[in-house]
Image 1 (cartoon, one colour):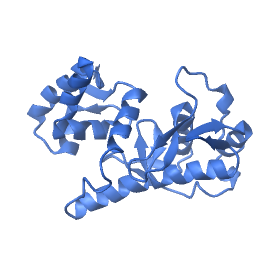
Image 2: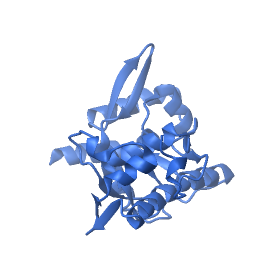
Image 3: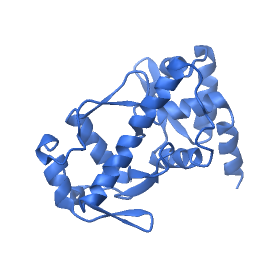
Length: 223
């Protein structure tokens, strides 16, 4: 179990933990972008990224002259979200208006690697259960009505072919209630971004809600 110690050592540094938090947004980020978002000197970023890569938490690929980092996969995102749920809700109380606004935006809607989280994610999960599209059984989501997703979001969940679980209940670290993860969660976020109901922000993993996608007007979201 020495691997656990290696991962714990990589996570123990606050700067590296913040980098992983930014990478939870999903899209790859360059070392320079991470330095700006985390608020550290660019010269220190490479060393931190190397330690995270050695621990198996991230992958680094060349994109032209830049090297971009991303989480090693959804399993890392799920582990980080689970760890965030261990701490008390107010353990990272923000200081200053900018930090308060940032946390509020994250709590409202954010990408958790490849699926929607925050109040918006939990509300969407609640609505899918309420309308019979998903069942919640013993803390796990089960696909109940595939046609609902076709009508409302423009994709058929039964046509998703993947080795990862189709749908998971991921406990939200700010709301402490489940949102939809797994391949279905990714498809939902992709659909909402494609239909411009949600929009990525350039300054972090918070998402802008550009229109009310929680209304039950299926025509407003479906392609």
